[in-house]
Image 1: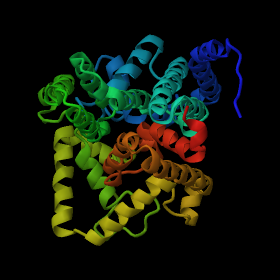
Image 2: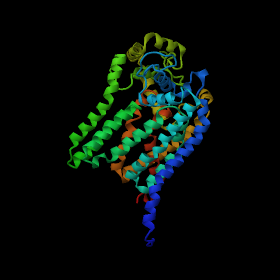
Image 3: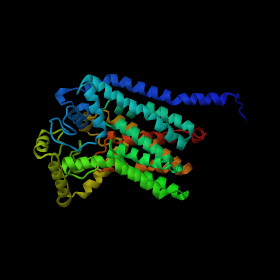
Image 4: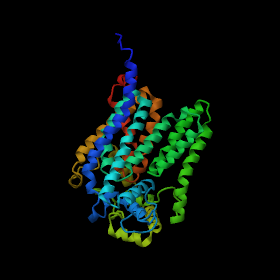
Length: 435
């Protein structure tokens, strides 16, 4: 049966669509600001060394704002560091400089900035979903992100780089979906540079960037375009953005690392020990806390200096693998991390529930999102496989770093927008999504 529409219906629909994203962004920001009003007062807690003010991020920002340079990743003032990426501590340092170090005003401002970043992420979420799902699916995905609990909590309640990385990385992903359509060399240069800036927020994104680039180059090559030149320009721009910080790290610490130097500390602390409520650790896994949570480790870090301290963790990690390998334990623990990353489940023991009383509810929520995401992947595979490959890169490649170290929910926020789009694809009838 034919449906008649008024002659001016299409212009009105376009006018409504023009205001759609601003309305969604404002709604998302308003929701987050309500949460900020309830959370910012708990940040400046001197009795706990202001740890809620960003932990290592906040301590480095304090050092920057007080004239000590990019240093002091723990509460005592110490020497130069490369334990954290520079972008977010730099932003936080600006807030401290303008509104006071660890002040209530600074807490309100930084959480408001986080909330703004998260709200603006509706834009790349919308256009990413529009490319793969169509206009209707894009609208639903943008609204879903505006009300998404993880997006609200990790932006309005936590001082960390989650919202900044989410905005930058989702923008990189959104551009990567379309990059093969352009022959403009500056577009490829710009994308590579943006990926480099994103890596300065969270270097874990670098695991996915080469694969996103290869997918785009494959499509360019298939169409007979200048794939080699485009790829070279993107990589040159990426390396150019990473190089200054690499040089700084070498001059300040004598280590050659593009962004962060703490990988062996993560391996040492998390591969055999430091697993909350994990009673299955092997005998070689004595207490292995981080300097941020252990006075003994902190004194050791301050006495040895960062380079020597991390070199020791490197040697101890290799010694673990040579003399106390426990390969079966490592395999099982890695599998548990994978399960936790996608379900939120680690244990329902009494100790776990006492420490994390909302574990069952969180497991239910995270598992439901994962099931919807898997259903969306299945639908894409059947009906729009070409659009699925970039999403698979994020889902399969990005988490690998955390499968090997620490898979807490915080560390999947960079790909949470893509998870939301896939979940929308899984929950809605496709005949209603496509225009």
